[in-house]
Image: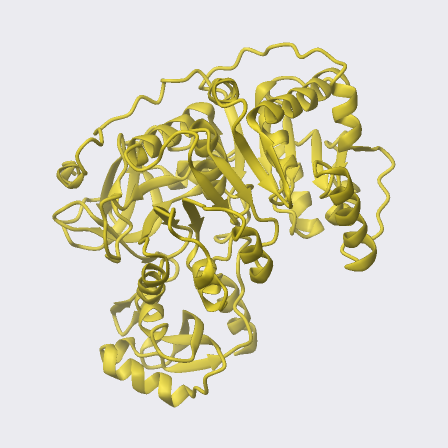
Length: 559
């Protein structure tokens, strides 16, 4: 496909970036720590550390890993932490000595944890104490893990606050089950020992692997996407080119509610904002909306990243509208489709539009973003970022015409090398001429804007007609009384498949008949959900993305 999207680029955005501009992520980190030494870097639970402190903590932890644990370049270290100050310290320490970071969701079950630790051949893990009991169960089945480092949430907070947080979690909230890992080392001890040790520089190439970033397993067993330093540098430079006219070095404050172990937050918040000397306001528990709003009251934040469910949950709290939005100039939405009603209300409250973006774990993650000149929600995921090629393919891998639906395929310097130790699965997602197949049905208009219609596996086929759940969810979400909605396919004797809507209601009375009547007024007949079920909650991923797969699996059991 000719790069028709370039004509829609705002002035000043280049068609290409240089993915070889930096030798490694370490170079970006160390340069930023020198240039921004006295500027705040990360905030969490009442404590802010600046770039000088971040460099010192990461140096001390890296020295411990290198000298005491004898970790070598290429060894895999798992980081099983929520959003807390220890996360950036651990990540940058690992990268500085050439380790490969394996991000782990702290909410994993023991079985899920076993799979990831074994698959990645992890030798060392740092975990938050809240989930040490889960780790204890997993370690019995993972012989590769030789070193276990445990940290308490308050470990890098001010002493009194640390004591209060750690005590409250264990004894008041009872969030720390009993555990016993005989070889466990405590994180604070690693820092005190590491401070006395020297750090030997490690030669790192941008072709070296930086992260094994595991997919969420939404299409089967999770796989580790091999992301090199170059992949992530490319995405950082693409973001820098896109937002350079909007963001100012050393001046930005970003709300980081999405977990840093997720690729969206990892690249956009942690890595990119470190490059520009920004401050990350780390929200440890974004599901606690009242406390999150209390934290946000302390800052004149300029940027926020989120998913549709997070934006929606924030706006439903009465105190959200009282926050200071006078400095907010970038709200970036991704991870799932942003609904029009959510985007419109967000703009009404904050006066800043949500710029919807699109990406994958396999693309580090960003592929497309709406331009910063966008004034109103447009229902697209924007334009391909610099140095990115896309095409829309039919089932025979032939390119379709402009405006026609097909599978989105991608080329660019941010695309992963492949899946870790999994050539079979790697071969399935790359065409013979090197296009990454996304599994997403999309279309591109004459101006180059990309519209994601649906995941291939989520599309509903009603009597031969394609029905896209995203479209139905967007319509139903406008109905008064609907808090959240998800639509899936269920079997039907006459039509093959029909849509079924799962709805979480708010306090407004709402019946299935009213939902159907509303859909009749806004959708063609074959798109109208045949079944409506009200539920207390919808299954979600760690970043708040609604998991239709779980709804389908439960539906299969109950029918």
